[in-house]
Each structure stands twice: as C-alpha cells, then as structure tokens.
Image (cartoon, rainbow, N blue to C red; front, side):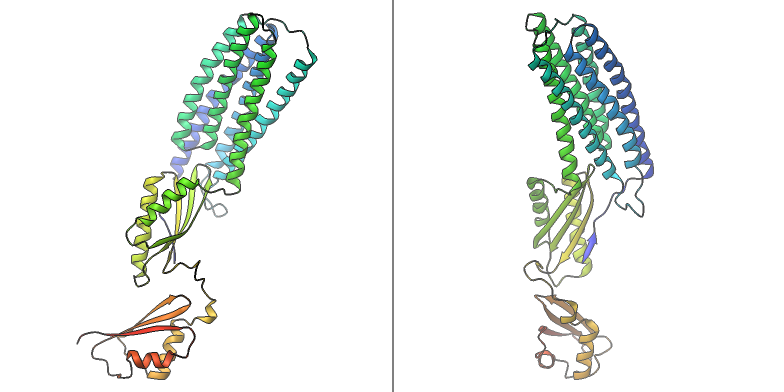
Amino acid sequence: MTQPGQTSQPTQTTLESEKHAASRVTIIGMVLDAVLGLIKVIGGTLFNSQALVVDGVHSFTDVASDWVVLAVMRLSRKEPDADHPYGHQRIETLGTLLLGSILIAVGAALAWENILRLLAGEEQMVPGWPVLVAAAVSIAGKEWIYRYTRHVGMKIRSDLIIANAWHSRTDAFSSVVVLVSTIGAMLGFVWLDVVAAIAIAAIIIHIGWKFTWDSVKELIDTGLSEDDTQMLKTIAMETDGVRNVHELRSRRMGHDILLDIHLVVRPEISVSEGHQIGMKVVAGMRDALENIRDINFHIDAENDQKAPHTTESHLPGREGIHRLLTEALGELPPQSRLRLHYLKNRVHLEIFLDGNHSNPSLSTEQVRAVLADYPWFGSVRVWIAAS
C-alpha cells in the first residue's frame, strides 16, 4: 500500500512574505550593483585600469541577474495548482540555469578580449590611485550585500537568492584581484592589470558553470548524496516495526526534497499499524533534514524486488476465494472473517470463526483439501473463538 507522508505545503501568506523579502533584497543589491558598475567602468576608463573596467562589467551582469531573480521569484512562489501540484519551484531552477549561462557567456567574452590584448603585447599604462579607492569601495559594498542576501536566501530557503548572493561575493573577490594587481602595476609590473582582468573573467566563468551544472542536475532529478541517502535509510531501519528498506528514491525541486521509500513490515499486521509505522519514519526523516517537503512511503509485506508480484489474473481476490469455499464447504457463518496474505505469489488464508458456528466442515484440513490443487494456494489456518 502506498501512503503519503505529511506534507507541509507553504501557505499563500508565507509565499507572499518570501516573495516580498526576495524582491526587497534583490532591489537593494541591484541599485548597489548599478552604482558600483558605473564607478568602476568610468574609473577604469579614466585611470587606465582594464581590470577595473572588467570588474565594472561584472557588476552590470549582477544588475542583469537581479532582474532575472525578480522575475523568477515572482513566478516560482506561486501557489500549487492543478497543473503544478508540487508548486512552481522548478522555475527557480530554470532561472538559476539562465543566470549561470549569462555569467559563462560574459566571462568568456571578457577573458578572450584580454587574452588577445596580452598576446598582442599592447603597451600598458600604469593605473591611477583612484582605482585603488574604487576597488576598496567595491569590496566593502559587495561583501555587505553578499552577507545580507545570503541571510535572506537561507531564511526563505531559496537556492536562487543564495546563488545571487555568491554572485555578489565573486564581485568582491574580483575587486580584491583589482586591488592587488593595481598595487603591482604601480610597483612596475604593469602587465598585472591585464592578467587580473583575465583572472576576474575566469572567476565569472567558474561561478557561472557551478550554477549551471547544479541546475542541470536538479532538472534531471539527480538524487541526494550517498551519505544523505544512507542516513535516511538508517533512520528508517531503526524505526520500530520496519524490517527492511529496499528502495529509497529522492529528487530536488528548488531547495525542497521529495522522497519515495518502500518499507518492509511484518505481513500479519493491520493496515493501520503499517501506516503508523510509516508515519514514524516520516517524522524521523523530517527531524534529520528540515527541507524535506514531501515523503511517499509504500508499505510492503515482503521485498517485492526479490519476489515480484504476478499479474492480478493469476492470484484470486477475496470474492473469488469466498466463492470457492462456499461452493465446496457451504456458506460461511455470518460472524466469520476471512484474512488474506499475498506473499511470494501465493495466497495464505486465515479464517476466524465464532465458537458457536454449526459447520463442521470448516476445519483447517477440509479447507486445505479444497484449495490444495490451486497453484496460487499457500497455506490456511482456521481460528475458532472460545465459546
């Protein structure tokens, strides 16, 4: 039987609050990026620093990515609907993929341009001291916006906002490279400015590739790490009533985790006890990983990977077995109960009779004799209640 674990669907109020927080921090970062980009491009052009110009272009890519974030967050925080019962977080994944692709393209173009300049041996001019000021201001501003954005991203559980925060930190890293290379150029190593520009472009490419590859892995439903998967299996195995775990599948959707798990329990327990065991597993897993959004558990009486079920036409149902017993042995008493166990492609029966029943043919031996020639028959037990 398949039972859904408890799903903590976000409320519309929560979604609106997250969307508002994401929009606010993104707009603040976008304004800062635009101001820093202008300062660095103008400063680099006026004071002979190609590295600062590339760093300024990097800041403008932050502005572009902020626009992407604003659009994507508005769409990805919509409530689940009939067409998207799990929500719209995959839109966020697509946004992160787009952001990473933009970074790769911009970084590659800047790297190529400066590599050609370095190979051509163009005469380089010594950067002016205002370049140092612009780089220092950029480092301070981008480190602050990184910490602020990452805090918001962790709070609302958004990989896209966290990715945007790291994009801001790469701008701070590149400004550090500008600062160091400018000092070196002022000391006589003028070529360091172009080398720094290439290094900054490489940083942009690296971060873009990381965002892109992580998004691709999510879109093709890459599961949790081996360590996390084993941890969840251990939690299930240590839950009272679980005999084995023979399948655990996972995938991500945005920051959330979706799980499917098969739990083997004792075959004689009731449906409700099996469900209760499953819910205990769900609770244990949620305690271990707080971003698990949905768990579907399947309760098995045996490992059906080792003993796959036959088709329904080969194993009779309750009505068919009841009819066979009635035709051969007469009507079952009104208070009787028939319990069926489908194990290893056979049907095992338990018949529960009231102590006052008047049908002597309803014995374990008689029922076994009636069903013995059927290939699906496994075993039978007849239980008679004390009078």
